[in-house]
Amino acid sequence: MAIGLYIHVPFCVKKCLYCDFTSYPYNPSDAQAYLKAIRREMHLYRQLLTSDERELSSLFIGGGTPTCLAVGELKDMLEEVRRVFKLLPGSEITVETNPGAIDRDGFSELFGAGVNRLSIGVQSFQDDLLKVLGRIHDAGAAAEAVQLARAAGFKNINLDFIFGIPGQTAGDWLDTLRRGVDLFPEHIAVYGLQLEEGTPLEQAVARGKRRACPEDLELSMYRTAISLLTGCGYEHYEISNFARPGGRSSHNLKYWLNHPYLGLGAGAHSSFRGERFSNETSLERYLEKAFRGEYPVKDRELISVQTAMSESMFLGLRLIQGVNLDLFYRRFGMRVENVYGKQIARLAEQGLIEVGGGHLRLSERGLPVANRVFQEFV
Ligand code: SF4
Image (cartoon, rainbow, N blue to C red; front, top):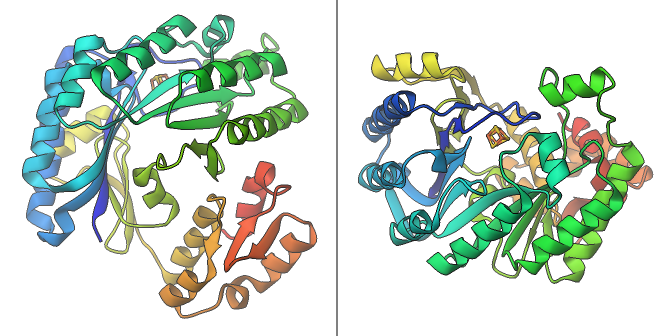
């Protein structure tokens, strides 16, 4: 099976106030060292992997803000991927970007280099809420980015949005969704804001300077997203993801279907050859290991059958179609109900999951409390 490759670019112009991802302020010398390290990591895999294992059906260059790098550097990275791996015809090649982080020529160059999907972090169309999040762009820049990408030829664009922002009203969220849909993206992802411990926004809430979004409002925002987006022709195919026909993200589907993938770069995760492993998140340690010619891996764990079954459950339940019961049986030789009978009975009694069409899935009531459901299978 061809795998998915993720490459993490951990640089941003400035850290957003809610961010706890692996990201560092951009500076040219770190970026150049990082690109060399990525090349070294790729070559370690060239020695390790068989020719079949180097077949890719998707590539996702994410961050951070990958377009902090010069477009020429991104193109070189892509060339190196093509030299080391075998990108199959028709592969989905995504680059993540943020409004204002790339200009018209940059979009054209990326498109010309074979990038066929963009994921743009719009987050909100309310300038005051973008400030609460500490984003560096305004709403106008977000709309302009989509227009520039279209003019460059991109026919597959995802827009990310956040709900549950301190101070956000139901009307703000509705307005953001409507303005998002008006740009006709092929794909939309909506995420509830996580107030991660230690981030400036979490601290502001803890000190009473900002008021967290009430839970019932956040829940109703999620429901609004589902009804508005499905009403506008988007298929709700994963808890947070919506696509126009043909617009599902094939790279992200690999994660949810528990298929193998490799991650390169600081903090990147992999699931490959029956192991799950993640790279050093510290830029310094990542560079050190890569330049010593070592795999820059920090944690590694063998995926036991029990873990693989558990992952197939909570990842598969993220998909609206749910876990394919027949596939589960064919993979593990055991029926889902024989392994998780008690959990399924308990959750079904609460109306949080349901079985139908050969799948076990979250019910409408279970969707907003998905994390509670997943806990049962961990
Ligand atoms: S753009 Fe994304 S990765 Fe960068 S600081 Fe903001 S939230 Fe974090």
